[in-house]
Image (cartoon, rainbow, N blue to C red):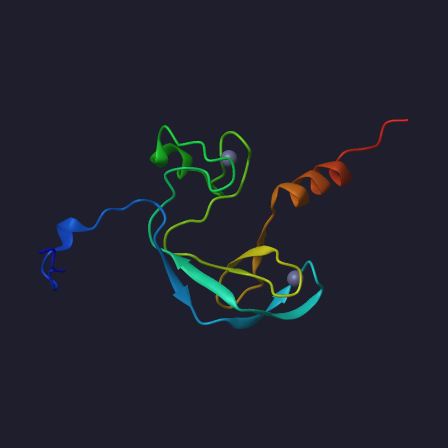
Amino acid sequence: MALFSRGGNKEEKQPKGESIHPLVGKEHLCQVCGGRRMFTRSWRRVHPLAQCPLCGVPFESVQKVYSQFQPQCPRCEEPLEQPGFDYGFCDGCGSKFEIVAGTKPGLLPNRQQREAMKKFGTTRRS
Ligand SMILES: [Zn+2]
Ligand SMILES: [Zn+2]
């Protein structure tokens, strides 16, 4: 019979890169909506990601990827959640933010938002 061992057995824990700790949703300032919104879906990342949540590419070196100031997928540039940090989705627009107590949440742009930023960041030809 497989019984769950209670405490004392930390070795069994397998950091798969997907473990997150759900947080109680709070109201935050969403820079995309331009106002305060509820972030019902919030969580704290516990382990680093071993692969990209967007394109699924496994990271050759998790350490290398996470040595950057703002870790991102080497292939698709998806911003990666960092262990010990809090994240949440804005209820208003669905954007993902890194939530830091005492400051404005920082946007983790999705692919669409990144493309829009690139477009607006570069001067138009013609
Ligand atoms: Zn990726
Ligand atoms: Zn929003």
